[in-house]
Length: 342
Image 1: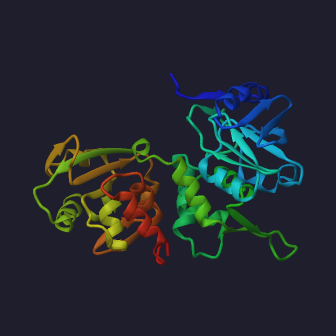
Image 2: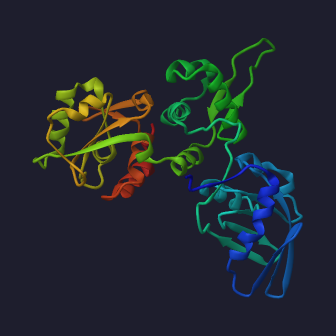
Image 3: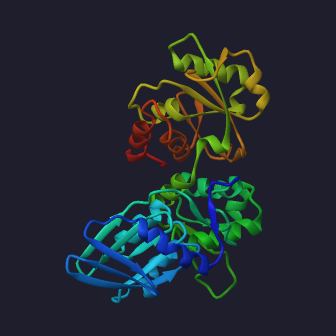
């Protein structure tokens, strides 16, 4: 049974909102939901016209109904944290059914984090930007952040994503202001060029949607050597340099030395590699991890360092940011480095 409650209609969204408001604890304040949200606090009263939206996106940052002078409240089933941060910076009042509430008007300044992760909108007709196939396009755009612009044909050839899906993803990225499009400069029919507009915003959005455990099959091994570079070299030589890609701690250290790497992690192409007699397999605490990705897109954007093939910097960051063993620290150090994704 799914842990999420899907909201498929605006009427459902509006019906559920009073229950969420009743759970928002603001000392000395009274919140009431009718056609509008009415707030009374510190002798002030504010009224917010509710604008329900099932599928929030960055397009809302330009919505005149939300950015105007009259108080309005964007209401959604769920607002991802990166988008919520963008809305807050733009001064757009917003709320979701998970308990998120941001109000900034007429002396009222509230910013409440969500209490749960229960509600989601039903699957939108728009493409999932971070599904295994479509993430190939995102990875390429972020891995090549200094490239001036891409054509659709170049991205199709590089990622091997179907032309139709590529077109839909690019259109979605433009609508959400992650990309900007350059029209042909002549009257003749020409190819559109797509330029990365918001590197950090797109990476933050991917991070919020990503989960290492959902997209990999991982086996851990215990190796009796403390020299992880030697361990990594043995894995590379046994499995073949073209069949493995270094990621996570050791990869981050090779790119930007910071914390001492505790684990050597590789992507491997075939599950059969997990059965090779490299060392003793363990349930946890291994210093060698072999991961079979659910999509081979990780093998499309690579780099060389220290005699090893590595995944691209953004992939190292994503693979490491949610791990323990000081993984987030190493990931942030890599991202803040001026050579990140260069």
